[in-house]
Length: 397
Image (cartoon, rainbow, N blue to C red):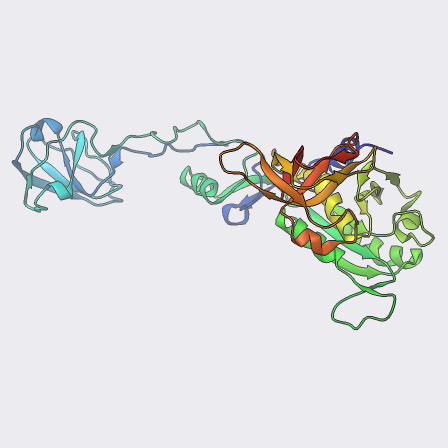
């Protein structure tokens, strides 16, 4: 068997890095910046007022109260600002340019709000309520670094320094395929021996949460020629094919039978659940094949596929947050395999470690227990028993 870490590295290398594309700011939300962004202008680009009030020379208002003539009005957006003469004030709005000669702004609340002349009741010192040029960002310096996930504030900054588009890692287009003759799509009635298909629904939702574009083919029957006939033409539009089911050691393993010898390698991974795995390239397209049981699908996604996809799309934080917690009950694990068990983690006030208890048994078919979990309890390969009260690693979902 291959180790969990080695197989994760294999899948990550298979996916590589997504192409870089240039997108308008409005279309770049949630994506990862592919190159540093240099500020085309300083922020602020000019000295401006932080308040509605009056631009003054601080020496003229050192002794208050004082009355000064109002020589001009400066609304935000004015570009022809006149110098401030000694012994005068100019009424100024928030964001408007500071006139040459002024070194402070008196808040309107500290005046009588006059328009011809103004009574100032509070002294000002140089720099009061003045936003200096480049105080936030200096022209020519890095405003955003490559690898930054573009949220609302990052996109706002890109726009503020003069950019209308950004170079980002393109979201991957993923084709999700579920296999199994026993699978039926809800709400069709079930016959004895059939089950409702759920893997593609889970995978598609998980992939979209990462920003992937997803196409889905559900419930492909266990027939090799039918599988190839349906899926092969769709590969041209996919950056990645992800399948569920048909990869174990049974007699009707359609994915394994269809892709063996086609560039995809099938192997056992030292993990529970989710041991049967496969990856490679089919017609040049990366392929990751997952087991068929729903919990195995979700654990495989967390252990291998999610970090590989994040890496491919330029992210630098690939892993779920990991914490230590004390078990509320004893657990067992098969030797030689890394076990991922659904659990519920509760922080403990005032202590470094919280507590965690399993939800449901280790069975890979127990999907309802996953909906009650907020973490995965990780038992290493060398651990076969973990006593109540012992500390374990927990991955927060």
